[in-house]
Length: 96
Image (cartoon, rainbow, N blue to C red):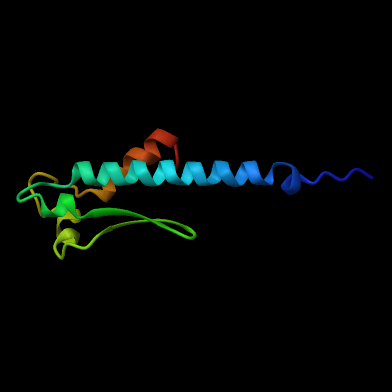
């Protein structure tokens, strides 16, 4: 019988790698939606927040009209911010 304790051996390294990849992905999404946010007064762009939580990250914008901007109600960003961001990520990572 051969028993290999993968979690005990490489578990901590996998956890650190997963945390690093999660952080990198969250930062990438955060930068992209912020860069794609249309600017009139700059309030919507300034209100993006990247928050670390116990089980990951939350990207938040509390401006009341952010949903309308993300639905394309701006000539500066007719496709919104989140859709182009995730399309770029999917294409880059060849995700279906």
